[in-house]
Length: 114
Length: 115
Image (tube, rainbow over all chains, first blue to last red; front, side, top):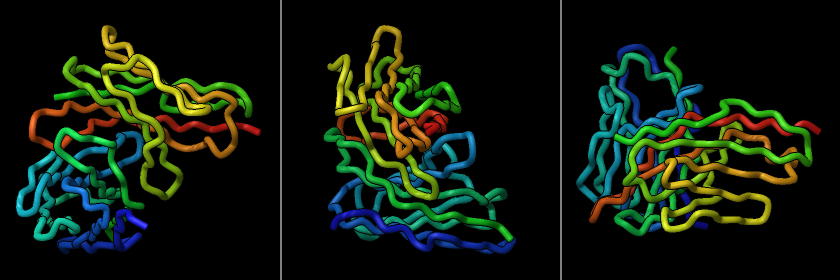
């Protein structure tokens, strides 16, 4: 079955550490997205990518970095510059361009600073 | 940029009653409005969407209405069941030529269906 896989499901980060969240899709979607979810604030866009080797900042990109070396993969690194990283992170993909059929979301990674 | 407001933030209904969630958007150029359902600890799932050339769309117990003039759209769930309990998000997007859609989400509504 096609879908998006996020790993790990839970992740703990110490102060000053960088951590990388994995996102893999086998839907042959062109576009991929990273969202952050905090209680009562909906989903906020961190980064998105429309095509391999290209990505754009979203609304809250500071303290995060991404890469898109393969169509199937869009990992997110939470750097030590992100001062409040505890949140639920969601990866999504879509066909992209003007042919939108909505987003397909992964099951999320819950990141906690310890 | 686009701003989407969603109300109410929490909604409790008796099983079998109807539930209505409302959203407003700010950018009149928005032309795609999906609704997502998120169960606890899971990612959101698309349940219904509507495009700006349509005023209403229905899928079994779920319907969405769009008023472009007033810039608001609503989700209607009839004959609610306990399994409808979840967080519901509305979203809006503008598709510009050659670019991927970027959704702007509302803040979510926690729907609780009481048995």
